Image (tube, rainbow, N blue to C red; front, side, top):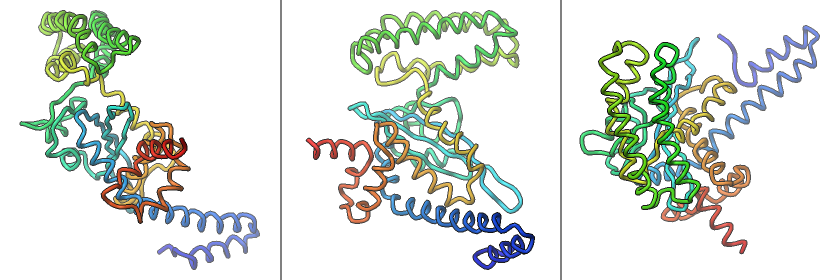
Length: 333
């Protein structure tokens, strides 16, 4: 069995020294002790900040509109890895601030969305994955579909079915309405809703008619047949934004939030165990929310790590990145 700890390190260093590799021996000693220290600091920081990362998820879960998505993360086991998942849940405040939360789990079943969002009402912006049914059925959050996912399927069908271009043109028209609202400063206002009903609703009606016309003409298992089926099955969820200006056309915000995890997979390859994944999720949430709101994560963490343990629990929200920034700005003025 491989020896670990200081004795194991010293044994390997001695072998390297006997081989005449003194420089490498010094480097190996530093690397093992430095990495151990950094790992300890990582877990200790996550533990100290747990009340904050937990409260952040609670604030997100209580919001009217929540975006959600998930991505796989490898978890180390003896001589192999197993699959874990990092879930993201995010929302936007009335002031336009983005709050990003993360949760780690060893499985992809619906228990994680249920743990985070269970018992809450509002809208949930997600793809078609059935794992979110636990919080949208039968009387949970209203499910809002993702036009970006629909578009990808029609785009993938183009090489074998050029008529898929018509669907892409319809979807492009929907996004042009959103661009018009954004340029006019109308996003999430009554005027935005009126614009959608005036311009987006006719586009959706024409697209629906096209879907019904095309469905019998294509094999269900073919690329275009699958794209048509996806859009038709998701139709109610895809069209809810017409009557509610708060709802986006797609779930791209969640996918962007998970790109940090994708970058992490390239750097650290896997997490060592379930607790490490949970700690990673908690720290990811605070750092990502800092970045989304123009807060320097280093300044933020240096401050709240010293304050969180003595801060009144009933005012813990003051230490969330967006509130921390607001209070700092008020103190400076």
